[in-house]
Image (cartoon, one colour):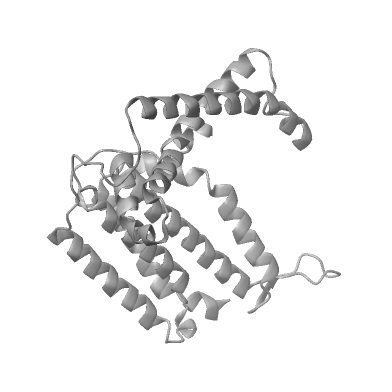
Length: 281
């Protein structure tokens, strides 16, 4: 399961999304997330979900990679969906398992649960493309450029961008190291998968201690290597690739603007009566 985490990984390619300016991709991702939370009905949410699927197809990222990334949020998605069913009592009562308790599965709870699940999946699918299609170096430069107005407040934007990117970059490394340590502990006879919740938590102590030690050691080695290369993080650094917005970036901005306008426009209409499954229920 640990190996299935794909957050922070970069997959080189030559797709349209790979060629977009990293700054444009960050802005588009942020706008898409905001648009997801502006959705008030299934029409707008379905539109954004379709765009997420289309973006994955255009990026040419392997479906296997996408499914591995979704596998880690299955528990979160199921838990969130169940909570919506438990705490939403709107609509028609479909099932009341315990007559003595004030609990029933309603049509409103199911509709709300499906809505939240689609929103979470769309959020993960689209936001994952940012790291899948952007190298850590380009991501660092893009974050630094976007945060450059903060320099007016004497904030070291270069160091802040570098810290954010390093944290993101080392997620796959830490995941791989956790898997190695767990395999080593299992080879020594450690039982990490059976027992009660407390027992399994105690069994993970021998895993996290070497992980923390190795993390500090790696951080020291990285800092030492950056110091040996005279890295200072100031504004005088030069870049091998200068970022310039191209026509494809402006076309992507225009497409996102039209999408957000459509999401906002559909929010002014009450279309709940068009749901056939709600009338049947």
